[in-house]
Image 1 (cartoon, helix red, strand yellow):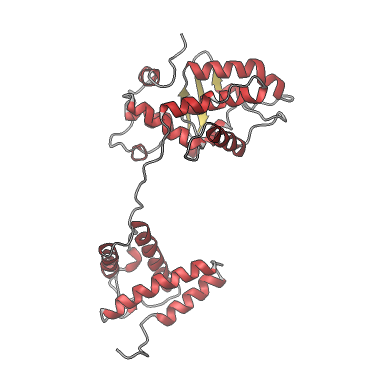
Image 2: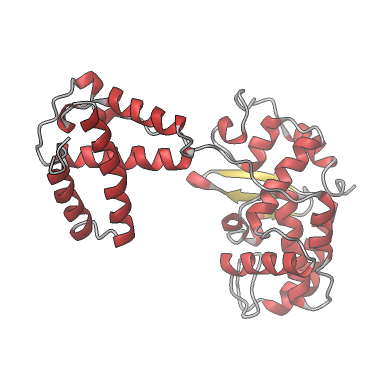
Length: 311
């Protein structure tokens, strides 16, 4: 092959990268990666004696399979597929003629699904150490202990816990109403350790922290609603204090809550309900949430979690 051979599609790639840089304002690093990924695909097409405008989804799949056989990671293959398809989507949007059949259009190329990584979780003894590390008698420590107990006892998200108002907590029924993703409300139950910590917070600490008619459950030293960043920081600091190697954050407590329930025999449908997952796939189950999974079943699952239900 002559050294001055011009690969089909190189000129169009230059135009696309010009658009990516000036219109989409992508960084130099991103643009360089786009060029590298798309150029390699165009060379692959050229070696097969095809015009770049004639390739279809079948060709792209063959290229991705070749990358996999060469040991390219799944994450990289996914990135390359997205980048290549993006180039052809731009070509199509600018009126460039793509000659592959409609059924084999590269615009219909599906990107490989990202591998679902199992979340990290804390062992039960680490959770106990984490929560037990907050043992001060000052208002801030009492509040932080109640906050950590509730996060682990319910598995609620940091955005949910900071949105809780006093009216959302029923201490008699030991439950809290939270509004999750999609503005969906659900009821979460908690055990005796969380009840004890919350009761102390309400009686001893919150009256000293709150200012005026603040409705928020958890407030900062200025009497205002506690922010998500503050919660993330206090959880992280507690993890560092007790020497936990991994980065501790509120969502880690959520993962730990769910994992510990399953390990103790909780029905996975109950865990789905408690976490507020709209899809059973998110909780890695294959059956839909049964409407028969009521409070008694949930209480039975929680009974084996940290602490038992208050009598």
